Each structure stands twice: as C-alpha cells, then as structure tokens.
Image 1 (cartoon, helix red, strand yellow):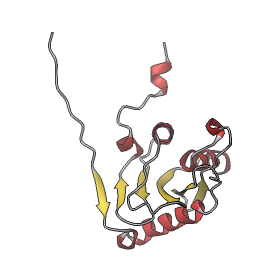
Image 2 (cartoon, one colour; image 1 turned 90 degrees about the horizontal axis):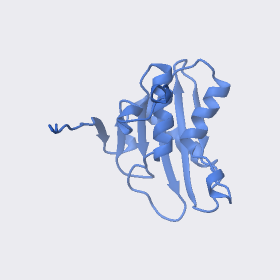
Image 3 (cartoon, helix red, strand yellow; image 1 turned 180 degrees about the horizontal axis):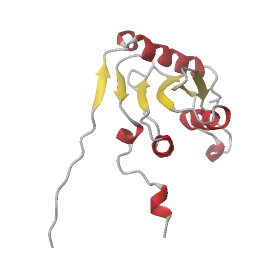
Image 4 (tube, one colour; image 1 turned 120 degrees about the vertical axis):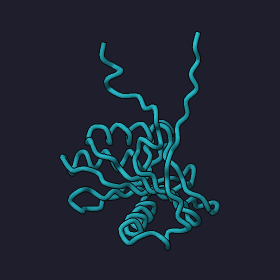
Length: 164
C-alpha cells in the first residue's frame, strides 16, 4: 500500500486595516457595514453584514436574521446570494465583503463565513464560472482578501458527486 502526502496552500492578502484598502474594496466594506445595521440578532447580538459587487457595477447588501428557533435563521452571506439570485438573475458576483459588528464586545479580527456559507459561496462561484473575491473584516484590525470562494473551502461538495 502506497501512501502519498499532499498539501494545500491558500493564498490570500492581509491588509493592515480598512483604511488601507483600495477605493472599490473600501466601498464594499462600508456597504457591508451598513448592512450589519439591518441585522436582526436579538439572541447573539452578533450583527453581520454582507455586500456584493455585481458585474454590472451594482452593489447589493444583506444581513443575518436570527429566529427563536435557531436553525430557522440565515447568515448574511446566504441571505445576500439568495437575494441576488432572485433579484439580479444572470448577474455575476465579482466580490463579496463580510463584516461582523458584535454589540457586546469589540471584534479586532476578520470574521469568516461559516461552513454552510462557504459551501453555498463555492457552489455559486462554480455555477457562475467566475471567481468571487471574498473580503473579510471585523470592527477593527486586519482585513483578509481571498481571490476566490474556493480558497475558503478547497474540497467542496458539488453536484457531480450526486450523479450515479
């Protein structure tokens, strides 16, 4: 039996703060920050906003929505791509910014999408046949920039695995 060792490298950029972003990314982070103010998070007080820039230049936003029946809530990222799917059919998502704005403490590091959101973003990227740049931020501190959603989930589950 032969065992082969392999490794994966994920390339991403680290920017000192949102103030050091280029104008387009700064605008997208600010839109995500605006979206976080729309969050409904009475249980966790963890407000998350997401913003996407589409290939036609439109920026659209969404936030997380909690529910007393916890599985019934939705993360900002999935809320955003579902909205885009319904209201901007055929548009390609070029980039998505995600920011968390907890109400009970200061978040000095970037927030990262949960596993379900990573799966959804990865599938959207595959379906649109174009990479989605992912920009992640907290309230303060460094910003992480990934060139694609696949960077966040290198071994995603995909439709071809469902075919017999």
